[in-house]
Image (cartoon, rainbow, N blue to C red; front, side):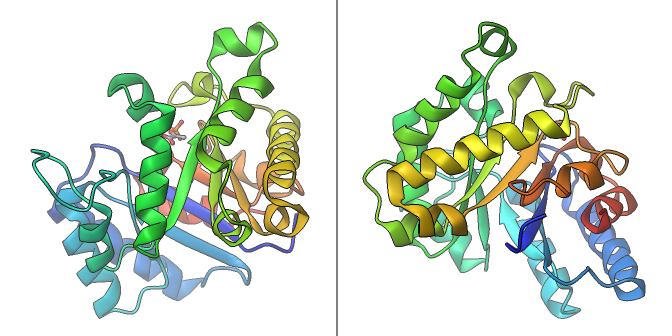
Length: 257
Ligand code: PEP
């Protein structure tokens, strides 16, 4: 385990109406009152856009120690982009973290590396923290190309940024073959790629910036495997999909050790 603050983030994807979201926050708040998060831990919730305002109000009115997150944003601040939501709009809702370049966005919605970079710019411009997702497909892993793929995604989004800009990032290593499949990378594999990511960041932005970046693992995390992953020195948190949809399961993951 590192001395960086560990960040556990629940990505609800296209799940939970705003009514369900409020009930979720109330249940999670009760769990946190009974057993507050361990020192050095932080938790963020990433509801769909339609539930952001309700979750914000529920968190703020009860001072629940959970950060508000979003799952995506558009790279422009405003304009003729029907159906899109800008980083500026999210910032006004007190969103703190924005997931950028999730593999579902890249694969299902055709987001390119260039677009992902522009989204990181937009999130930073509005003083929020991007959670930049990188990860390889099963074919790439089997072909021995996992590191090269992750390096290329990182370089596309990070190269040329100031050291201070890089230090603010959260990187989520999410092997695509492990997302929503029940297949988890072993804790050793997750650590190996997290260490590789940190080394790449060091070559792009120097040791201090690389040492400040939090690197999450994501892919079929659950309360049973979370502790082993969080004990790895370069794994600074978890990005959780399916298992974040139940308050007790997300809570146990956030408390795991
Ligand atoms: C994700 O969508 O980021 C994810 C890791 O999903 P799951 O935990 O369901 O594999």
